[in-house]
Every structure is written in C-alpha cells, then in structure tokens.
Length: 278
Image (cartoon, rainbow, N blue to C red; front, side):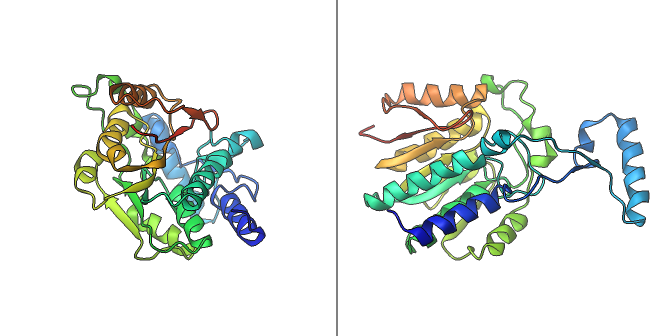
C-alpha cells in the first residue's frame, strides 16, 4: 500500500508524536519531585515557586541518545508517545496489513498515556480514508493500579502506581487528538480499570489489539477480555514484553490458549504476533 503523500504524512506524524523533530528540552526540576525525600520536595517546591515569579525555571539537561528515542526507552517531556519510532512503525505495518487484506475489526490500545499511539492509529486510518473502524482508547487516566498480589502474585511489589508522571487525564488526551485534527465520533474512550471496563466494552471484533499495561494483571485482563474478539489475521501487540510481569502474563496466556503463532520482536521492549486459528 505505497503512496508517497501518505508515506510522507505518516512519517511526519510519527516524528511529531515522538518529538524526534526537535532536540529534547531540559527536564523541569519539579517534574519528578514526587520521588524525592520530604525535605528535598519541600525545598524544591518553594524554590520553583519563587523562581516562577521571575519567569525562571531550573531544568536538568536531558542527555538522550537518538537510539534511546528511536527505541522508546525514555520518558519524554513533550512527546505524545514514549514508545519510539520502531513501535510506531510496527503499528503502521499492522494496520496497513489488515486494511490490505480486509481483516475485519476495530482497533484498541489498553494503556495510552498521552494518547500518541492511538492518535497514530487514527492517523493511519484517516490517511487511507478508512472511516468505518473505531479506535478505542482504554485507560484509567489516573495512572496504574496498585498491585493485586492476591490474584496476580507476579505483580507483588510493583511500583508503577507511584509514578505520577504516568497519570494523564482523559481531557488532556482528547486535546492531543484535537491538535492533530483527529478527534471524531470514531474515537471512543473507555475510562476506568481494565477489569471494570473491558468486560463490558462495546467491542464486537478487533483487527488490532495493542496492550501497554506494564503489569501482569493489566496485561492478563486485556488478553482475557479482548483476545477472543481479535479476528483471524489481526495483530496482537505487546508493548512491555521487557517487563517481567507483562512478559509472564503474555507467556501464560499464550500457553493456556495454545497460541503457537510466532512471537516477533519489534525492538528492545515490544513484541507482536498475527492471530492464526487460535
């Protein structure tokens, strides 16, 4: 499905969403202040308030390598996505394949942060004038849940829920869609914990299932409730296979359901497979 105008547009969107068109700016000192000790938090909070009156901001220099940005192993300040160019390329490949082969179903990402991957899904559909498929945007929009070690022992001690940087409101994600002129009635938000929203989501068929829940429980909830709805020939993408909990959930589900489709690596973190007969 080669088209120069489409290729140029999607390449530009990927670079804009990942902020690779520009040098990474400094990290404001207060951004990760919640990780510091009480005394340091107090000092930095007061310092930044005083400096703000004089329109001054202290930043830490971000010495990111281009490969780090390409493979999505940083937490960027201004990008709408942190998954990097290789995983965005993978999304494009999977969508173009299902469009070319007329695989039925909508698209979903579970765990969206600032919405960049979902925005790109919508951009690919719009570029090919595919207006019938829905992009589902599933997130708590409050960060990650506390680990449920009783039901998911693999998540014991997981600290993702303490990362305030990962909590982005639905309103902010909607605004990000608007800035790319890609918010319409075919973008549907599923707000809440996956265990609560996914069992009742208005989804009949999926062609793209992209999981970015980091943890065992979040990954398993997504697979249990959504993988059976993935059409044969559709793609299941796992963003966080590098994380122990997510990897174990993926491996456990594939083993339980006798999924033998080859698990293909995208980059240092992500993997995917194309659904066959199981």
